[in-house]
Image (cartoon, rainbow, N blue to C red; front, top):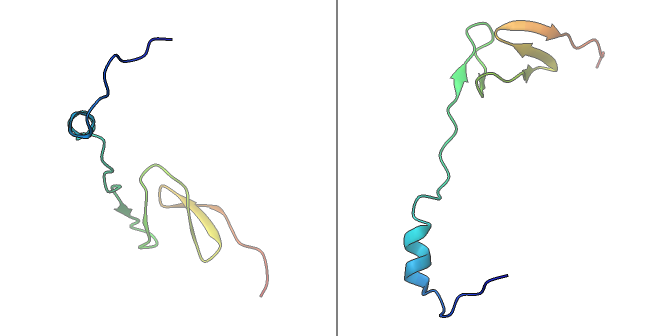
Amino acid sequence: MPHPKRKFSKSRTAKRRTHYKADAPTLTTCKTTGAVHLPHRAYTVDGNVYYNGKLLIENTATA
């Protein structure tokens, strides 16, 4: 396994890593429930599971 002949400086490492940053996720609002969620993902509202504005799994548990 090769090893560097000299130490990489912190500034050189930081220059290489300038593009490695976290982006804020894009969120969408459901027209049916008004819930804010990640696009193309199932989401829950009051125990019910929705996807694409349609009810997939209804909460049958009684409180």
